[in-house]
Length: 260
Length: 309
Ligand SMILES: Cc1cc2nc3c(=O)[nH]c(=O)nc-3n(C[C@H](O)[C@H](O)[C@H](O)COP(=O)(O)OP(=O)(O)OC[C@H]3O[C@@H](n4cnc5c(N)ncnc54)[C@H](O)[C@@H]3O)c2cc1C
Ligand code: SF4
Ligand code: FES
Image 1 (tube, rainbow over the protein chains, first blue to last red):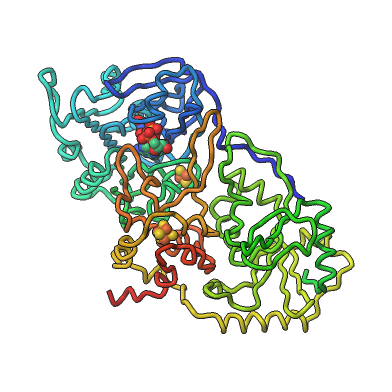
Image 2 (cartoon, rainbow over the protein chains, first blue to last red):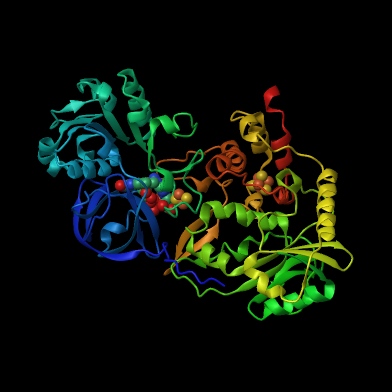
């Protein structure tokens, strides 16, 4: 009989949280002691034993320490910030295919921004990178303390749905600013955010003749395992965890459940 | 190798396997057919178990934080339609789920090939009960006569038994031919192109389905599970795509409507898995329908005339 040795990929490793940052009312960033060892767009399962696990995108670049930015929204995400140590397993999934392109437009809505932060720091200004980042209100913007740095590394467009008395930046949905990007036609677009935001952004990009082959979406689904065995995260015949989370628009546009 | 055994030799085979494996089999408990540990071959009752043998490989109430020492099991009396479920799900989860993989490697399933169609099964739509993939496959083709198909890995348990003759093998093949002719026909081929996203079937089913999940639990191919922390354990439990919580997230639920979940179940079986893994996620066992309290029929999903809608 064969005896096979196989690692228990359900079992997380324990990591110390070495830094915690409050970003907004309900969003925080944690930095762990270990190196990131992952690429922009990938994700981990973070866990608090006794509570559960949550899939969370990598917010760090491959040369930083592992970082996550989390919205406090439920059982697990409300407990992580209080911990000194958490469970992590990953990285899972694919990454933004930035290697293939010289000109990239990244569009992030709401809490979709961590993988775009990761991308900005990964590229370090070496490629032509445009970033449109939209949040509901100015107080929902995360990474405010990095925006000056981002402006050096990319062409940054910040926008909010609703301004306040201190906001003198742009107001409007991210889609409104797509037309401001020069020479869109030969660009790649990386989209992450609420489904309706991605759907409308795709429409707008197609209007400017961005190729469906060069538009990428990061999809979000309920996940349990993260590596293709629990069956929770399907979109059509794909599992988001193992075939994604990033999909070429041309490969998913005919799947009826993409923008749900 | 293919062997020819008599009843006495089958019992002898059981004893040989028992030296290396814990032996399990289907037994009759007051009319219920269940899998249980057995010590003697004659305890075995050749009849389809009330539940599929899925639990031998996909744990329920299993702590995924600790891999157990593998235990070697031999399971007698598995029906082909149930066994096929494992070969189908292998394509998605073997080598990735360590618990499944280790158990799969340490378990022998001895499947028994039906020679007469059962009441509701439609396995011939998927090739019939004689399997191309097997570990030890038993065909009791005449009284006290068995043709046994053996994967090379287990050949050593057959030392001294005689090989089946061409005559015996062709008897089995003819029997299978007759079986497939006799069983009622359901043409599954090409359903992935016929089935319709907006078919009225999904709403029709949603009106009567009580969301019990029995169809998933009884399915020999359904592999989905959930993880939940209980104290310092992370517990795997079977899950069901019919339940609303299956896809619910903090951001909402992409399958809020029951009709979309029922459709998902059938699309996974007949469209998605075919596309991603090359086979249908169904063996024709009909267990889902047999166990459904409101008689939602998988055969109707296959036979339905989508074009006329
Ligand atoms: C690939 C991926 C990357 C993500 N990246 C981030 C990120 O960087 N930052 C961030 O704040 N959030 C991210 N999310 C969403 C995050 O996973 C959920 O907000 C989180 O799982 C909620 O868990 P909870 O226990 O606090 O919530 P509860 O609502 O209490 O969770 C109950 C159950 O539902 C699951 N669940 C709930 N919401 C989601 C969801 N939106 N997606 C998947 N499973 C969910 C949980 O895992 C848990 O099993 C990401 C989701 C995915 C799929
Ligand atoms: S067994 Fe029948 S009633 Fe129960 S969930 Fe399945 S389809 Fe619905
Ligand atoms: S999260 Fe388990 S299959 Fe994708």
